[in-house]
Length: 236
Image 1: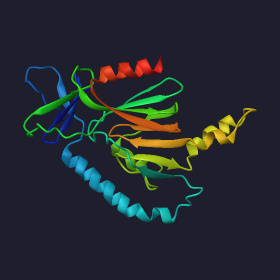
Image 2 (image 1 turned 60 degrees about the vertical axis):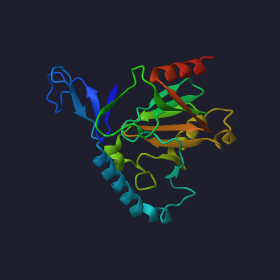
Image 3 (image 1 turned 90 degrees about the horizontal axis):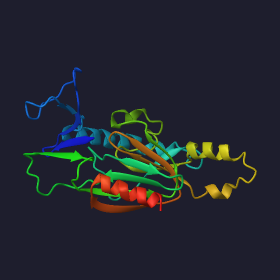
Image 4 (image 1 turned 180 degrees about the horizontal axis):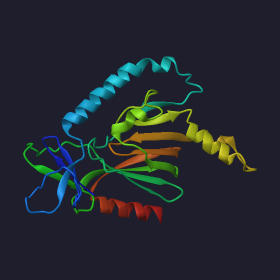
């Protein structure tokens, strides 16, 4: 996948439009492919952030109504480094013991003057600032929804914030997993006490995982090289 990020603030996603009726622009006039908006222009992002802030102000009092010992709700946690808002391009790998998450780090282009197009291509040999998150857990879900439908999420009015990392307190997902495992004759409730439900809201995907802990490493490398490093770690 290729993401074209115009440093004046606009983002495009490279797609082969073919004969389909899609709006776009032709970058060189002769190419048969077109560039389709990914709807991540800075103005839209700022509008979404403003809406999210308004949403957060509106729901600040929601915790007064939540029974924090029993009701499910989302708690925003500090997360560094922050992912790129418009094109984080997350990738997920798992081997049944650990789960690895790669994403593009949000770093301003110090050399950008706003007059050229910067293409983010995970298949290229270009190096990018990338984060590798290693979770101690393997039960995850990925995809789910994009930022245009955040407001339809069950916990949107219970603490969720756009483009943020969270821990889901009193997680119904964890409770579902516990109930499944309770049929085992050697089920031990203590094994679940340190497991947490993390939820990361990206631009086009949501990543959720049940894990006891995580660590984050930073790299300046290609997507392919970091994926190879993940494969090496999973199989050593």
